[in-house]
Length: 317
Image 1: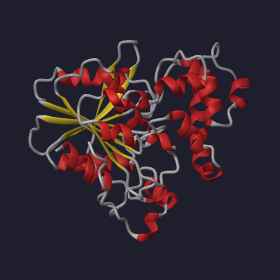
Image 2: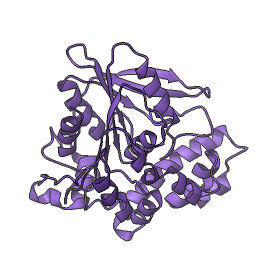
Image 3: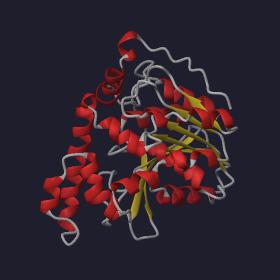
Image 4: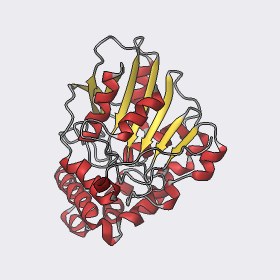
């Protein structure tokens, strides 16, 4: 498919990538969306918390929305996207990754950028529900990488699964790590590390035989966290093995249903490998849109509607 020529032209302040990123994450009024929580028991004895939102009329269509690193189902970019979908006849599930719902998960392992088994479990549950004829997926940032990896690694997809959307997705994890470690991204990097260290400390108290204060003190970067926790907790040789095996760029060419990748060119979190132009040009299923503006999940139109929310709806409809 040809690369999609983007029509996104925001107001002047939002043409700055950092401004649009920070405004959208911290200053945008959170769109209101009624949510009902359900807890799903997972095969390994852990749990997954999901938040349902329902269209006014009974719907036969459901969309699963996945948040980014250390996000949750209540973040503005999730409720904003969910609100648009509900208002246009879709039921919505906002999926909280393990340990992100406000309650720590039960196992030593947790979620990561490539762990798709929880998403697969949820999709299988929806596949068996008679009410739904169509299932679509929308992922933001880390969640976008998960959506693309899941769709590309499956030999056969559930029949009801029809579309996917990945927004501000780091398709190449090592490249995105390198981008986040640049001086211009110091604030974002430190914010992620601060949140992850808090979670590490709580988990350390539950699993003292696997985690300790000496390792905790060594964590000063995302690479440190992935080296000391993510890789060993999830069966990787080291952080670089984790990045290599979990990057969706390896799986995108195998995707068998239509997917939209919406990555802004001024997204400071992304490396050049996160814009798979050649793949999109050769594929009938990969629709790549690269707006000049938008930052990281910062596609502002107005506080009630964001460009990514509008585009995801258009693509899925």
